Amino acid sequence: MAIVRPPEGIPVRAWITPRQSGEARVDGEAVAWAGRQVHVRYLSREGREGWAWLWADAVERR
Image (cartoon, rainbow, N blue to C red; front, side, top):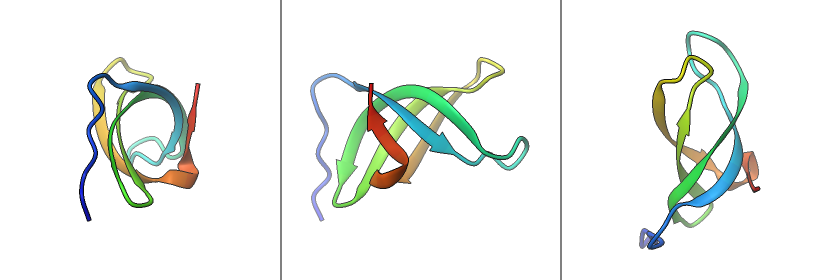
């Protein structure tokens, strides 16, 4: 499956599940996708940068 990388990140809102804090809804950018998965760059509530591959159903455009 080919990975698509847009020239600029696309603003999204996503559900993530960090181990330390449980589920969270975060704002971020979709930086790549492949099939039904999206690679999201986001900032945690604590202000730390995070990266996650998520199922497309957990991501929506802002």
